[in-house]
Amino acid sequence: MKILLCGKGGSGKSTVAALLAKNLQLEGYRVLVVDVDESNYGLSSQLGLADPRELIEQIGGKSEVKSKMGVVRSDGHKAPVFSETWNIDNIPSECLSKKDNLYLLQIGKVKHYGEGCACPMGVLSKDFVTNLSLEPMDIAVIDTEAGVEHLGRSVAAGVDLILGIIDPSYESIRLSEKMSAMAKESKKPIQFIINKAEDAFADRIISRIGKERVIGIIPFSKSVQEKGFAGEALDANSLNIADITRFILCIQNRRVSPIDRMGDLKWSR
Ligand SMILES: Nc1ncnc2c1ncn2[C@@H]1O[C@H](COP(=O)(O)OP(=O)(O)OP(=O)(O)O)[C@@H](O)[C@H]1O
Ligand SMILES: [Mg+2]
Image (cartoon, rainbow, N blue to C red; front, top):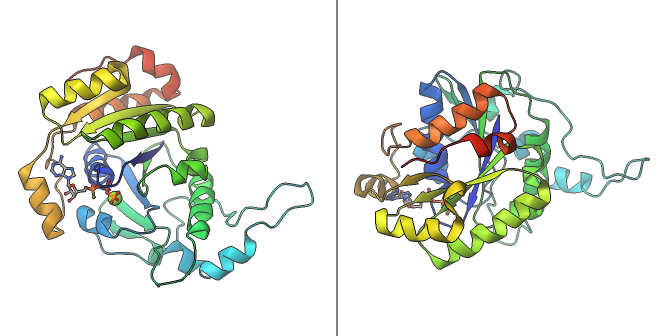
């Protein structure tokens, strides 16, 4: 199962990605975290893993990917920039940071002033995620950059579920509408997680986005904020995300499309 996290800047995408990955690992799964955020560096620290060699470097650098973009095949379709089908076992080891059954792969980061747009990373992210092959006990958690540009680039094409992270802000609510519309266009199921919200605020957010859309509420935590500030790793239990983990496992184990499962799942707090 491949899960894509998206949401407004600072809403908690990387925090939830790290916590979800660690909780799923504790449940016995191999978890590959794919960092497709080309700007931020925090995810590896939140996971407690070193930064691996970037995939884009491994396959020849940004200019190499750029040269493949826009190449049209004889059938009239654009050729992919990355056509390998990799699974966790055959990803080159230098491209993975690993601890037990938790793995991290980074697509590539913007490093230099004036280096140009991040389109090569976006296209590579889409191709890598789409081609990624997972075993039954594997789950991929894909952490994206802020906003919806990756949805505009159809990075979600190969995923099974989109999770929108909503913090208590006007911008997040607006973005949730945009994300829902884009998920519908891509025919991908989307659910939301409310983060950094206390009960009263969470209820107000729920009344705006709909109860059946929310799979978990994560309160604000002073200790998580401290760890975030210090760049320290999170533990699986740094925040209680049992509802969210249960939801994911329910889908994973039943092997039913999340769209079909939505109606059955009870929302709980
Ligand atoms: N529930 C929470 N309680 C307290 N602090 C939190 C919580 N969730 C996230 N944070 C803090 O908020 C900050 C932003 O979180 P995070 O980096 O996960 O957001 P993001 O959506 O990935 O941001 P970006 O869009 O920049 O990648 C971090 O300092 C993190 O520690
Ligand atoms: Mg982030």
